[in-house]
Amino acid sequence: MVSFPLSIRELKATESRLQAVYDAAKLGLRGETLALAAGMLPQEFMTLSNFDPVVNMAAMKGKADGEREMAEILHNAARGGDAKAALEILKHQHGWVAKQAISVEIDQRISITQALAEAERRIIDIIDADHNLPA
Image 1 (cartoon, rainbow, N blue to C red):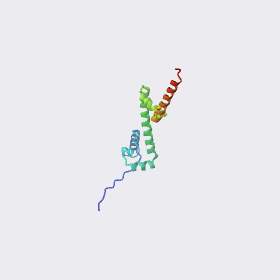
Image 2: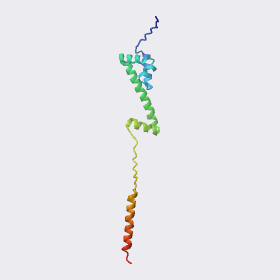
Image 3: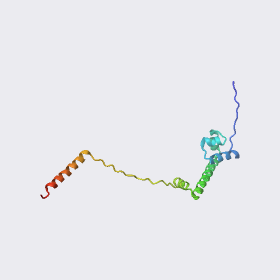
Image 4: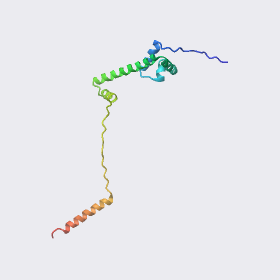
């Protein structure tokens, strides 16, 4: 029989573990990548977050702080004259969209039989005009 060493990891929301979750969430990591970056297996993170709501709070606070930090950077750039940053804020935060230009092109096609009929009418009009001229 082969024996495997058993290593039981104690799951507690220690201060260092909560800080690791906060730091990973602040960088924008979620789910499995957040768990691994915080030094836990994904299943361990799920179990710990189900038993201790402080873990979820650390993840939410980290996400909020990371988002706030990036928003400040964008707003400062926009205030400093960066038009692209200002436009991105307007598009993503305020729902601005670029105006759509509508181009209308008319493509007129003339059929050969119609063109011949019109030419024949013009010739008849010219001949009629010649007969009606005083001699």
